[in-house]
Length: 163
View (cartoon, one colour):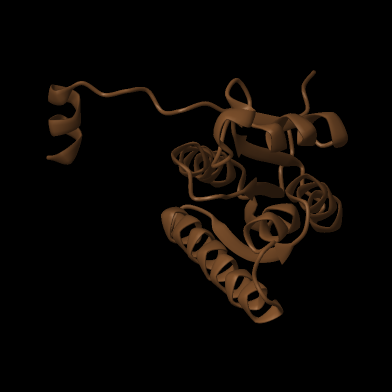
């Protein structure tokens, strides 16, 4: 195979977790190497929103939704900032099932690659592999690069990188 792999768009779902941030760093290196654009996406999970606001009023649900959107916007902003100077990046926050939204965004943006964390902010349900990550792998035809937690640093390694 003599053709060079072409990547123009890399999709990175973000959720504020350590794995998500590490995936964004990987995506920035990949995108820089190919001159690709990164699209960061955060989905405000409607099931989580409904569960959290089940006993509240409509006003409570609207307030919670706004807070979750603001948090998602912060995750996207942080990811875009992380890639500054290395790759073109943009991002957005959407409502809905995270798996469905990632797959929809991959199709609509023409993503050549999805880079996502192995586990995110879902607790015990996704101990071995995040449930959203697993579902995306099963649901899309776009290649998915699954990024695990960053290696743990010893005290001396952490000091060396801080200097």
